[in-house]
Length: 370
Image 1: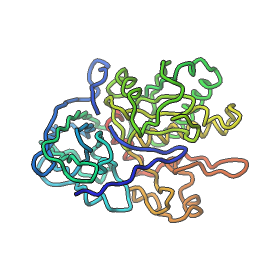
Image 2 (image 1 turned 90 degrees about the vertical axis):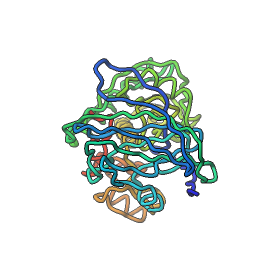
Image 3 (image 1 turned 180 degrees about the horizontal axis):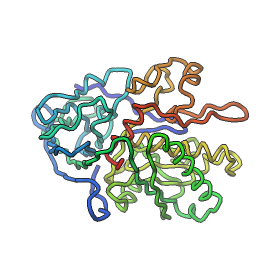
Image 4 (image 1 turned 45 degrees about the horizontal axis):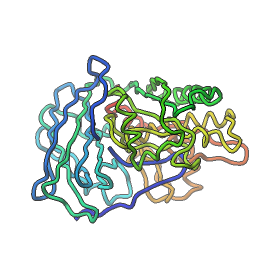
């Protein structure tokens, strides 16, 4: 039996959960190599998914969907040596990947995660996935379908990330909002520039509701919209509210998220939450909006908060401090891009634009970073 974690749902710039389903549009000349298939679990409730690694492959993104809840149990390299096991991380107070948690029928794994993870050696890699019911019991004869996207990236010190930003119905016609979004994208570019990362954003108008879904819960609207994204794009939906509320600035569909279409394959943003009580963007609010966009995409690319608001759980980056109280964490981590909330007083907020070296490694190793 595998213990279950309670669902997590946080206010403001947070979020999670997982995803799979269908290949997206090809730009013509594959930026990513893609394969898909289905496997069935055996008597142990697990199945093996094979990943062919070439000499040039630098990483892969596995997206799966099953008849039951799905999680990753084990990863073995091309020499059949175990390089990852779920129990080594599941009960720790540090977060490496949400792929180990059987919370939904959709699961996403990006590998390798950090530089210290085993490099992609040539040969046939094995990812062991499990099917689990709501009580944590492994399920035999359960089908799990998957998509594997892999990249050949010989420069993990620089990367471009393609973003498809889509406005909800009518939002793209609101000049003050689009001007604020454009300014926020520049803030985002400035945040990423020291890490040699560049968001490449293309903007469209959509016809979905201004009340966008909470991405971590999954939505057919997210699935349908992502079907029109390119295979190497992260989809971002900009609406007025999220799940009927202005309590959330933004929500990411997974840690990490997927580049294939499923019910959680997007980051969602609320412009109204970002504009504050008067609905008019100030320079400070534009800055926070840009930080939020970078923060939520950071989640989607595999970053956790360096500390959660329990002050008792941390990310798996050795170069982010393990502080243990709000005041201590505000002091030590309050300027980190992935801090769980803005740190403000009555007149201003800390600029949150810092990323550690290991946080940057994780962003560079996301399969959608090209």
